[in-house]
Amino acid sequence: MSKERVGLNRRRFLKTAVKTSVCLAMPQVIPGSALGKNGSVAPSERIRLGAIGIGNRGRYVLGCFLQEPDLRCVAVCDVRGDNRQRAKDLVDDRNGNRDCTPYIDMRELLERDDIDAVLIATGPNWHATAATMAAKAGKDVYCEKPCTKNIAQSLALADVFRRTARVFQVGTQRRSLPNFAYAVELARTGKLGALDTLHAHPGGLGTKMSGWFPAETQRPREQVDWDMYLGPAAWRPYTRKLMNAFHFEKGGGMVGGGCLEWGSHCVDLCQWANDADGTAPVEYEPVEGQLHARYANGVKLVMRNDGWWPQGGSCPVRFEGATGWVETGDNAGIIADPKSLLLRKGAAIRGYPADFHVRDFLDCVKTRALTRANADVACWGHIACHAANIALYLDRKVRYDPNKNEFIGDEQANRLRSEALREPWRI
Image (cartoon, rainbow, N blue to C red; front, top):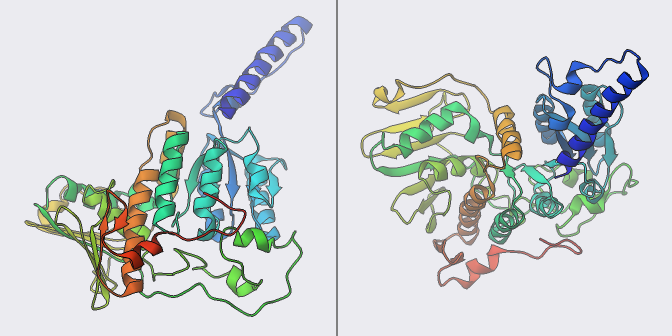
C-alpha cells in the first residue's frame, strides 16, 4: 500500500540521517515527533487522506478527520474555487505548511499513489460513481450519505468494495453514538421480547424531481466546473439555485422526502436493530401519509413523520417488542417501557457528531476490518429506502425479493431500479 512505501522511505531516511551524523561527528537532533515519541504519531504510521467535495458538510467531516493524530490530509478537491481555497487553508493551518494540493478534477487526486484514503462528500449525484472510482484506484473510502441513487447502484457499490478489498464507511454516524447503539442492543439481545414493529423518521414522504431552473451565465472553470458538478447526472443549464440545492439528484432524481436523507440514518438503525444488515423488507406500501414495510421474518417497519417523543430530537427511532419498547433521537435521551431497561444506559452525547464514526474508519483502514457501516450495510439500508421511494412514487404496494433483487411480478417497479448515467461516467 502507498503509505507503507512512504513509511519505508521515511524510516530509511531517518536511519541514514543518524548514521551520517555519527560519521560527520556533528550534533544532530531528531525530533521525538519524527520517531513517534511523547504521544505523537510517527510519519510512517499516518494515514494520508484526500478530501473530495468540501462544501459545508465536507468541511465539517474533514474537520473531524483533522483532529485525529494519525491522519495527514495532503490534497483537497472541489468543483468550486471558494470551497477549494477554504479547505486548503484549513488543512494547511493544521499541517503547519502550505503543501496541501487543491484539485478541480477528482481523477487527478485519485491518480496519486501516496494517498491511502479519501473522504467523499460531494453532492449525492456523485457519491456512488466517485466511491467506485476511488476503490478501483486502490483507495479506502469514507463516503457521505446517501451513497447511492438507486437499487442497482447499491448492489454495484457493495460488489466493487468486495472485489477490491478496500475499506468503506458510509456516513451514517449514528451507528457510532451510544444512545442509538444502546437502543439497538436492547432490540438485538431480546430485552424487548420478540420484535414486532420498528419506527423510522424519514424526514418527509413526498416525491418530486430535483428541478430545472432558468439558465444563467456560466462562470469560468476555476470558479465553478459545472460539467464536473453535474457528473453522471442528466445535463441541465447552469444555475446557482441548482448548485446550492440540498436535494439535487438525491435518489434517482426523486427527493423522496427524506427516505434517502433521514431514511439513510433512521432506516439504517432499524435494519441494525432487526439484524437485517444483509437483507431488506419484502413489502412496501403507502398508508395514510406513512410508508409501511414488512421483513420476511414478520417484523414491520413504519416510516412516519409524526407522533414522536417531543424531547427526542431529530432522527428518532422506536423499537417495539412483545414485552417492551424503546425510543431515542439526537437529543441523546432514551425513553423505554419498562423503565428497568434503562438501568445500564451509558453517558449521553447530544447531537450527531461524526468523530467516533471517523475514528472507526481510520482504525479499520489500519486493521483491514469491516467498519460499522461498511459497503454491505450501506447497500441494504439504501435498498430499503429506494424500494420505499418506488412504492411512494407509484403510490401503491410493491413486493421485493432480496435474493433476486427484483420486484415480484412488477415490470413498472423493476424499471425504476436503475437509471442511465451521463457520458462518460460509469460504475
